[in-house]
Image (cartoon, rainbow, N blue to C red; front, side, top):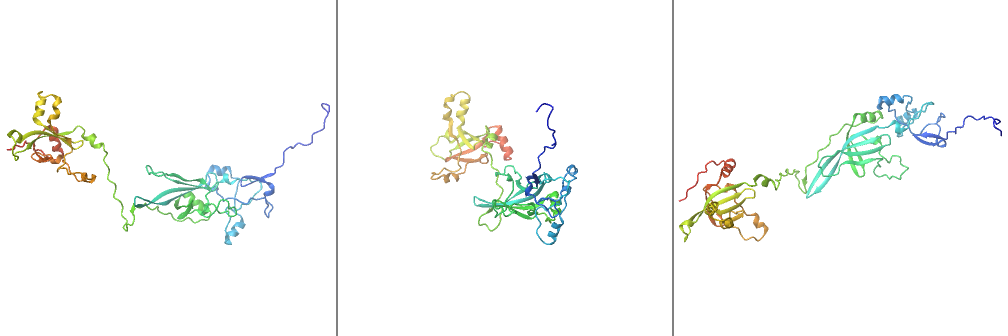
Length: 398
């Protein structure tokens, strides 16, 4: 055709016809939609009027949507028949459809409860009660269970059941013939049990919004219950329920070292050999120096005369070991027996600071030593603060 000469265009609307309709928020072909007796196309499922549970700003934006119960549904309730999960609503021309996910957006039922766990370890059985919080999400009928985290509990806590549709006990996921195989909010109530994956949760309470929602749906909410306390550990085959005593705090192995490192009790003593025969006069009452180390409760005995001469420079430091009568060690009160087993060492008793007092005598592997004086001011202050001893007068022996 030549420019400027052509056929007039008569068609002005090039849009394609609508072949889909929305059913519960899902686009479906129009052939799947059925008509009611009145001729209007309605959906097989609908929702309760929840506008009073919505925030005011959301209610104002959707004020054009009005839901009401069908009269046939009321007749089913009066006849004693079980109503459907979501009763139908009357469709009105010119009113937009609101899908379920939008109507129930962020609406959650909150329940409080607990579950009981019985554990047996080291011959003791314990019944522990764990508090939980169950949440039911109305937009997609999913459930999640959360246990509050207790610090230093030694066991996994937090999210026990992830958010998903939970099957009831005895039902299979592939069972499409039973529409009530999943837990629904109509099955939840206070003072009731919920069995999830073999673990039984007891619902004890709910918040005020959940209570009002259930009551508006015609469900009578039970009274709240108290959460029981955990029982103390019970011993097996023990008729009387007795609680274990609290464990005693254990001292740190380095505590004694940090408190008494470098602290030494010094005493002047004599080796009493007056009753022995064949001993010279100088050896009958020979002076010695006894040192008690508080850090590890060990004792060392050295020759007092040798130490005095060494301090004056008469002996060299290389001969220091010649003055040691008893090397540093724990001193038993009685002669050490022949050790036949490790249990024999547990029966030994050793000297401690309360046995080292002026005028007392101790046995050093069969040798009798008598304390005659305290060596320094630290030793006197130690006995003054711990044993209330104030008299440190030297003892004179005949």
